[in-house]
Structures are given as structure tokens and as C-alpha cells.
Image (cartoon, rainbow, N blue to C red; front, side, top):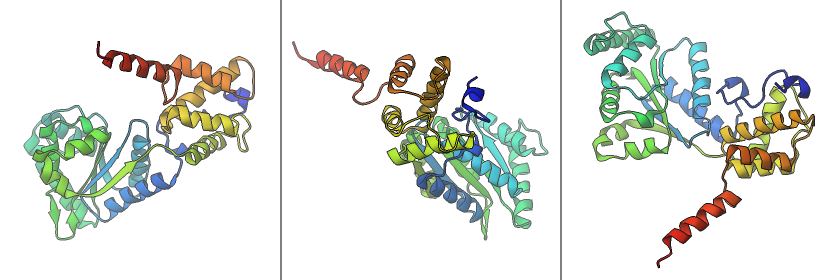
Length: 290
């Protein structure tokens, strides 16, 4: 809606995980390098964790682009709320296995055949599971067993589990200790620092066609970082709404007053905000003994 007004060639702060807008912060660069290395070296199990909105899915999209460029077979499970039968059926569809896809036994035979053929050609196969913190215990156990497929050169199936911090806590459970021992690489995404947040905002505006932008002042970007608590997805939502608000009043510059309005509309809370202080006061009052 506002692209023409600001001279953008595309929307700079879309919430979609577009690799074209991937901001290569030091931690994101390191995490992506670890994912690629884990696949290339056939390490087996890799875990990517991070809070909601820190960029895990974008990282996986970048990894998918790499796998496609290298012609590496992979299955991507984006819906983790599945039982074991659905889990194997989804693998079969994604890898286009020539078998009865509702039969776990046939899927396993076909999958093993694919893995062996790829290994003979010096290649590997990758299983990516997003939102892995939602996986049922039984499905996690099946994933562990898939990790046992190997030859003398390494694991035949590279398994990447991505999820929120609950995934790390889940993997610490005693009944998953065998799976935990098999995890060779762990990557954890943290919220942006102030410097990263400013560079992130400016890099997205640059990618959209606004280099040397003057829409957001340094002070405003610093406040956006505070209110978003460094979470990239929240930064995107704030900036997108700010641009829409500025467009509505025909202003080429976003202001703190606009940010206040956007935060109220989004019902956003952050440490030190009025809503946050009000909630803390209410909780303190409720805990007060009579």
C-alpha cells in the first residue's frame, strides 16, 4: 500500500521468511554455517533453537535454498503436530518415495533404499522438522531411530530439529537421553543487540530500494529495539505499521508519537512500559497478604 509513496520496489518488513531479506548478523551467519557444515559432514542430528520470532524459519528457508542448489534430497516438515503414521506419510510425500505411503513399513524400506542409493553416489538426504518442540514423544523416538541409519562414512540421513526453547527442555527429559546424546551440533538464536537491530532495519530498507534511508532516525530505531525486545519479527511488525501510519498522514518520516500509537494498537508490552508496570502493580497487589 505504501511502497510507491516511499519509493520501495517491494515491501521491506513483510513477516514472511524471505531469504532475500536475510540479515547476516554474526550469530545468524554462524548458525547457517553450522547447519550447512552439519549436512556436508554428515553429522546426523542438529538442533536449531530460539525464542519465537528470532528467525529460525528464515534460517531453514536459506538452508533449503542451499540444498536445492546442491541437488540434495530433503524433506521439510512444517507441521509438527502429527502422530507417527502421519509423520512417515509426510516424509514419503516430500521425498516422493515409490511406496504405499500410509504403510510405515513400506515407507521405511523405500527411505532406506533412497538413502543407500544417494550414499553410493556420494550424496546425502536431509530431514528438516520445524516447530519441533510440538513433536509427540513417540514421533521423537521414531526420529531417533531414523538417526541410526548409517554406513562407515557417516550418517545416511541428516536430521535438523528447529524449535523454541521448549525443545531444548524436552530433549533434556530422561526418556530422550539417547536422542540427546546423538545431537552433534546445537545452534541457538538470541534477540538482536541494538547494533544488530539498527543494521537489520537499514538492510531491509536498502534491499527494498531505500539506501541511506531517512525514514527512521537512530533514536527511533533504538526505541523500536527496546519495545520489540530485539525480536526480529516484532521489529518487522512495528516498522511495517509505522510506515503505514506515516503513509496515512502523508509523512516521509516516522516519529515517536507514531510509535506510541502503533504500540497501543498492537497492545505491545515491554519492560518499563505503562502496561507492563500496571500488570506488575496488579500482581504485587494480589500477592499482598490481608
